[in-house]
Image 1 (tube, helix red, strand yellow):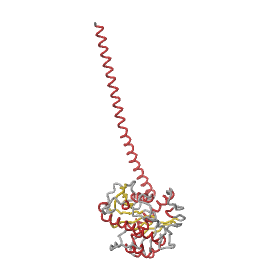
Image 2 (image 1 turned 60 degrees about the vertical axis):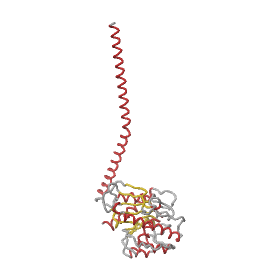
Image 3 (image 1 turned 90 degrees about the vertical axis):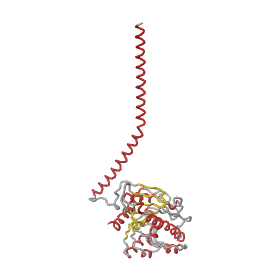
Image 4 (image 1 turned 90 degrees about the horizontal axis):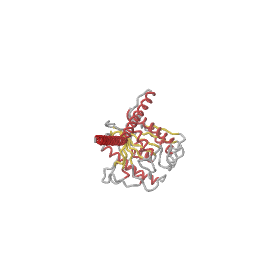
Length: 353
């Protein structure tokens, strides 16, 4: 009898030991699940940590480069912010169709965490012969990003495009430019009205663009609605916009229809171009359109603050051989960055020094 009780007791111990082992296995499985659940968060932590250190490294590299030159970085002249933010597809129209018309959209670039009031604004306009292109153009994105890292607020805008190729059909060129300039002036008015919201200085609105965008910037700054409409053969109606108050113009390989318009207002202008540009001749060739060299020479005569940079041996868009179909290569983008740095130095001298 006693032997039977011992066997029963032993069986109970074995069952209890089995239950303990099962419980231990459950705990291990639960621990494994907890560790597995924690892995995505660990991955996020690693990503954020890498981003943080990357920003720190970028800033350290910038500081070291300036120390090596024996100077400290200057806001609006040098790249002082390691990053930028962009808010896409905003509307600069106060009309009822705001947000619906793709031609009136803009992307806003600015330095992150910048709480400064009264910041300068650059309105950037893309090229494309008034027929093609958008605010997403590679050059526009590059210049907006880098100028934002210099401390500027940058608005890359779309504008009304024509349905016909302008090329050197001056009638179509004038009409295309007229409607695009009207949109640029709408953008200027919008940002002036909302200057407090965007924390920008309404007296430091700069117009900038490449190719057709440079033409828009020049015509918007130096001409009036009446002058442009007369040239384009368009009835402007009863309104007269006058000259918008513009702090400066960045003209990347664009041109102006009439050099005499430079007499209208004293707006500083910086011109950049390629010496072999056949799309926008650096001086003037066969029609009422004057390139960067002609603008520079006339501005000098009128004592308008200006500067000129020529990339010897390069064509339109600073390409070796202009080709609007294929994406530009790294060498061209490097020249774009040089053009940008030259323009930034000019703006700093005339507006901030």
